[in-house]
Length: 640
Image (tube, rainbow, N blue to C red; front, side, top):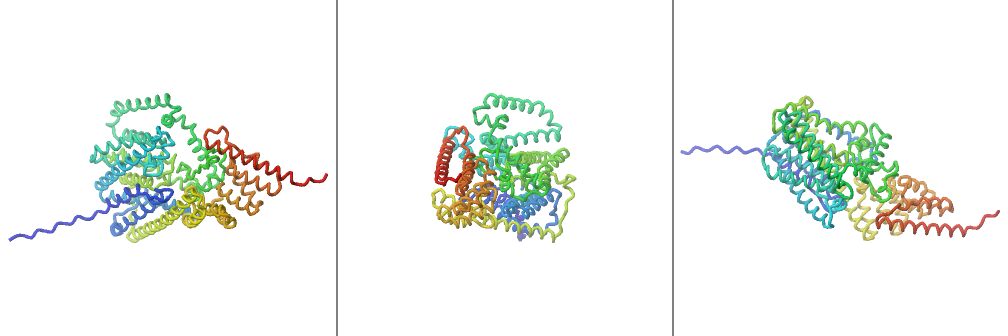
């Protein structure tokens, strides 16, 4: 007689690996064509959708899990998101403020997801993160190698070629290089387990080579800072490391520094790659001068609202209000800065002193906790993970001083992962040990608020995607001078959730410009007046609005606005010509000529575009002066 065998116990379903692949994997590489920025809004929408799906999968577990807790560090993240969201109430543009604020919600929820996954199963989560890092690193490296090959078709790998071709999986060469750095640190975190050692090593070497070729100074500094962090943290936490460092690492490091110094000294001039390695040449570069100008102007702006800031997303609107005098490319070449290229400084301006303090704590408190834990921990693998996670956080802190990772979805995901890893490894420190455990009702409320926030994100992301699609169509039609199509698409592009393009020119400006080209002056004026209200510090918007005013003989209304445009950009020749035209129409030829005398040509033009621009300016000056002379000769002489 056979005994009945017991039924096998079903292994409980583990949703965390799927959640991590959706969020950390797909959320950092997803893109969609048909919009100007293939990566930003599509990733915002996808990551919001993925997190909502994950929340649905884990709702019951999180709702009934009494082990869910909030540590002091979690509260800091919640406070930072709350301040971002609250600042929409006093921001210049509520649509831009909400978009930026909801990116912080994504940061917060990715952080909680990774931390909860580690608490639920450390080994499985670390293994999954390492698999994701391997896949992302291989994919990103492959894409960049193809793009680098395309960039070399002109015979050299100069910086201009790199900007044209090497967008990577992020949008430009700088962002691509940032991704390579964060992926290298994530590979280091996962490699502690010892699995996939050879593929990890090969990929790490490949990522380092690509970082070197992409010539992004901020990432060079991030790599150096992460290396110094690793050495310093090992020295204070591992007594056995000191003799190894002195005998083996320090001599190699010294030789490497000497080799780099010699290379820079010998080839630091006249060679694009060497110049970009040379700190001395960087200080003389256009990029450095522009950044110093932007930082100085931001400091000036901070003085106007030092305590609570101007609200999230306001920097890009208010920055030109203090004049662009001193920034050559911004004045002559219409180069538009929409970020301060220093997230801490930008947050200080937009969120005031509380925002800067919270952000500063988020940047540096995890590193303090990591050092504290490293000195007291005896767990070798845990210490190694903390060293690499800390390297990622150090690199992020360096990069954000020169770039804008806060704006990009993939950068926020990587930052959230490193924050979560650090918080998990440091969970027994005094600062994080005493956690608040919310009751069932509060857990339910927090889950509901998270779901509501993600649903709003999906709506917001979709509306922005729709808007950007119509804007992309308008740009395509504009390149073909199809002005009826431009007007139609620009009208469809404008909605309350995204009334601007990527450089905060209102969609109404495109509709107004198209209507003006089609001879519909009154309709153009309506569109352009709305564009001016939406962005009153864009000198291009002001100028086109005034052109429609001048066409309707509203010269007195146009003149003060044109003077404002020229005050913003003292080298804006179109505005000066329009002022000369306005005063000519009013019969004040002396003032008309005075504005013509202020028209500038580009000194010492070096390119064909600059020479052609000078020729056009000189031709316009000749036409204007001839017209003024003709009008003066027709005026009757005044009696003695």
